[in-house]
Length: 403
Image 1 (cartoon, rainbow, N blue to C red):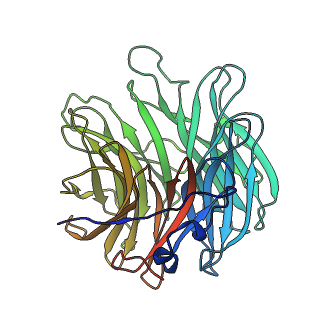
Image 2 (cartoon, rainbow, N blue to C red):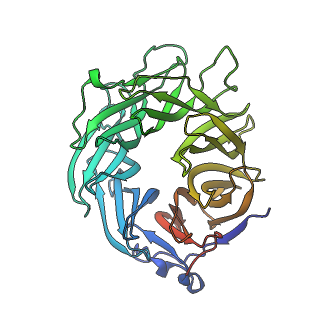
């Protein structure tokens, strides 16, 4: 199937004014919005609010060259309501955003410390209007630590998932382990005695997300290159899941999803049937990338897994469920440039339609979401002349740009 490409033709930026007025008049009728001030911005995650407004999460480069967290609220038409940056005197990069039960905003981020260049996790807590309430650092002195996802539990606590160099068994190729921390909604860490912290298999393991099940147990999702003697894993890196009990102790066998090439986990979602669908990237020995999708049942049993049969170099980024199908986003690498990829895929891997958006420079996909009316939104990053901007694209249920 041929991918339809929309080339977003852009005018030169004037006074760093980044709005739809920078687009050729023909494209002004379509829902492509840009957010940011002078300098570079990137878009990584989004939330759809109950009033159909959007929270858009990204990062923004300051005048001193360091990166801050950027959060923008936009109405249903994509018009900016407010936009704020958060951070201190070092680089801070946005990872994900969720709402707590009171409507406060929680942001997971990774920071680069100014003394020694080590990375730590950081959580920001904001009120519904974007005003900073609190923040806290997560990590171990002297080690690199990263966080990716935050889960709200049934008893209104937080499970923070990431990766750390502070591994269980140092040495050899065991350089990263998965870690998780349990916290109160006030960002106070619970004691070690109440929650398991580290997960590792004497290889490289990276944590992406955790999901709580109805019985209070959890399912973790990530990437590992663990080697198993019983050949239950393919060669190299694979996406994988493992279950824990309600205290975070591993309570069952891990399960791997991949091919003879390397797979890297990006996102997992809970599906309407109670199971889970996950998306990642398969990288071949020659360096080519393709999107890889796998599905499991509610009891963690394997359903199916497949790479997308697309004759282009695409990295998988995000997945959303829509009327029994999956909407997926990714980034196409082609001849030194990148475009945003969007597709609708059946549960068996049939591509029903696909489209891409971009220009002559670098455009990168972020989170995708399917709205109740069937339309689709995707946050990402587009390059406008010499700067990058956080963008929001809305399409019809067929992946076509909407007015």
